[in-house]
Image 1: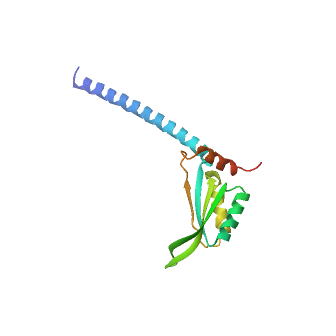
Image 2: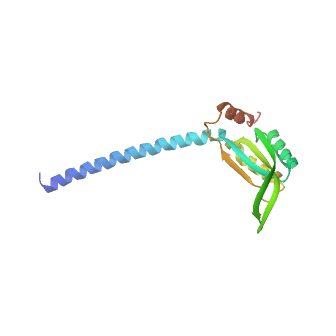
Image 3: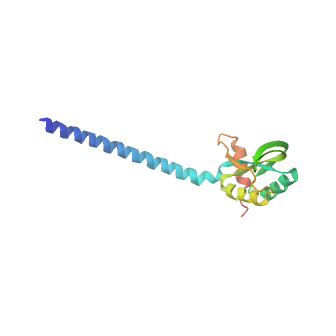
Length: 152
């Protein structure tokens, strides 16, 4: 076999390897996308903790009760006083506030954030949501998910 024949065999081998790698890559991408789709569908049950600072305990209680009544939150912990230091409108502020720790699910999060912003006295309320690791206490995570399900 001449140089041209060896070159053709090498090219066919490289092309076959490229196709095999491409098929394997496409298969891996499809499997990953299917897994991602399943996570997104199940994602509404993922538990989140939302931190909200309020101007007073009364405001926190009022907001918390509404969130629980309309089933956007499973539980709200209220702690006070906290001391908050922050920059607002070019000035450093030093205030006493009340902290709300809200338990909800990802499926309720958008409505919860919107509702808190509506009810809150601050022009720009601090609302921070964090996902909870699924390795947390499973019975508690299940309870949170059940508590925010609509009744009907």
